Amino acid sequence: DGPLLTRDGQLPPQHLIHVFQGWDRRVDTSLYFTADRDIRLDIVGYGFSGSGYLCTFTGISSHLSETVSASRLSPTVLRCTIPAWGKTKPFDQLLLTLTQNVTNSVDAVAFTDGGLDPRPVFPSNCAATKCLISILPTTDTLSVTQGSNEGGTVITVHGHGFAPDSTFHRCLFWTGNASSVGDSVGVAGPGWESGGVSVGVVFQNGSQHVLSEVAKTKVIDSRTLECISPPWPYAAPATVSMQVTNTVNTLQYTFADNQYWVSKIPATARAKGGETVVVVGKGFILDAGDYQCRFVSLDGNWSANASATVLSSSLLSCILPPFTLPAQTLSMDVIWGGSPLERTGDPGEALLQLLQGWDSIEGV
Image (cartoon, rainbow, N blue to C red; front, side, top):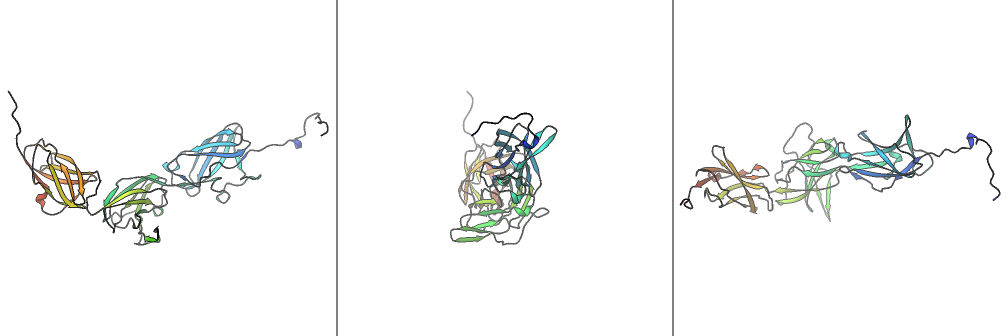
């Protein structure tokens, strides 16, 4: 409490204190981020000043890295945003390091982890909310959302952050009490991964456990993989959950009873259109909106499509369009998902005879 002493002359160097900058943790408490979204991180530290800060993210497994600029919000907070990692790279665990561009050099900003001494940015030193960022892959859409319950449909899965190793991803299909995983039926060749008929993947629903089968998958790139639908040995049609292993979301897929058509009513129709044709078959999917009746001239030079409505698993109907053709015989197909359904039975059932007629007289 005595009088304040005054300094006379230059302060000796040993009496100067240099205050260093550094950082301790992230503000967020997220244990993981999805590969399809940008990540904004606020970083808590001390002594931040000026500009030129950079955040560098480096994959532990892939060794891929990306560096982005960081904004100084205050002397204790930096903010950096990394573009969605999974747009161009496989999912990974990322290590975060900070640097600052200063005159003629790039200086590291020390990670001190809440203490006083700098710590190396290694996986063993990084907790999930500090210098370690976990990125998980996502699935977005399927190229086809339904297929035969006999399996064998090649499904292209679009997403973010898929691993380059096909053994890491499997396509799983399940309901509350039944599951199946893409099997070995169908496409084979380099890059396709498959296995035996049973593995230790178990789905639990209440007290029920269901073993799954090994999927066959082929990773194209970080945004695309393919898998082959398995046989579905349960009730069909069935809309089930579909998930790629090691991703964070599920999609919907429908197993249809093995579809085909046998006959139609009527066998003849007027060329003016407007009549209803009822198709008899098996395995039609209720509420599906992508059935069509296609009519083609026998020489293949003319065709027309009409939307079809599923009435039951064995009946669908379509209203004939106007045919701007002379009366003749047309070939008919039932189209589902862009491809013709199998037809069995009498070949004559695939033919529709157009009839001519007249309605009125024009003139004075």
